[in-house]
Length: 157
Image 1 (cartoon, rainbow, N blue to C red):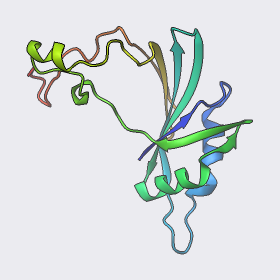
Image 2: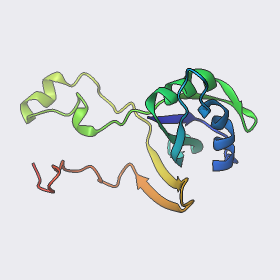
Image 3: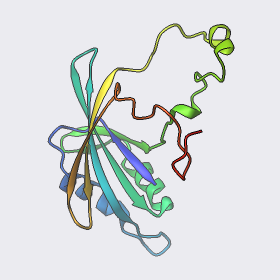
């Protein structure tokens, strides 16, 4: 299960996240113990307000331990700030109801006149716990990365 730590302080490192989660990962007589698979940090640069927000994604196995971490650590203090924890859900453009199947449907079904999502530039730094390497990836909202869907064999639909 992937857990998102929302709006963490900018000085938070992988050590802080591990120290925050580690006590809940320990199992007991009737509870399973878990482990952290990976940690990645995201920095969102919000274009409209010229602000920066920091998030962390933690991959925890098994899922039952991930739910326990969310339940016990939500709205707790990390590195001097109260944060929110929740399960991370991946959004993909093909699951968006606003993506229309044909040109005819675009005009009559579109009740939303403007985009409500924030314009952001996301910078991701991935940390792997086992080999502690860091990879920097920059993803812009204008990059066109998800332009066309591909199946698992690399063919376009």
